[in-house]
Picture 1 (cartoon, one colour):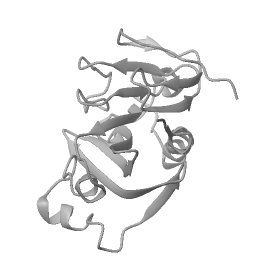
Picture 2 (cartoon, one colour):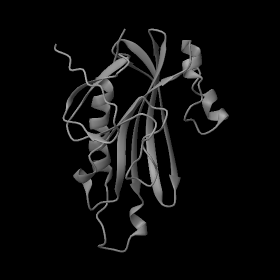
Picture 3 (cartoon, one colour):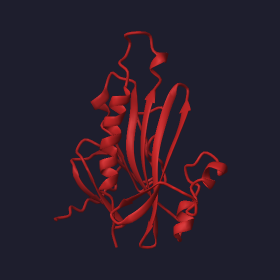
Length: 195
């Protein structure tokens, strides 16, 4: 398989599709065309609740025009390399969890849902939040390989349909969300840790 090396130094670039390889050669993943690519620490979003974070290595934001005229906000796939140097430290990083009590549920010794991606066992959790009639749902995966702690995350945001007057906007339905989440999960499944 031929690899396409893309070094992105600018943010807010529309992806033409294919394999993205991290400039530091830490990971790669396959992303369909049309996603907005955010790199560096200056990341923005069209969504009220941001789906891209400053500490991520890369964030691919779902093409917003696909659900124009609905309560869809934004969606993304993000890859972050955390500073943990052990598998236990990777899982117990506490990044992105709502409370320390919740973090206790993510410890390696406990029964946690896992998913194997590229031969790496990732621990998985669901997370979410809300602000001013806007909701966000996260799927987060933490895995440790080749001395690196990887956090893979998907996020989907939308506005509560009930806050709009009837006929003003179409609802971003559960079926729509399942379609978006399925595409984001295919990107996550393509993740590969590199040497």
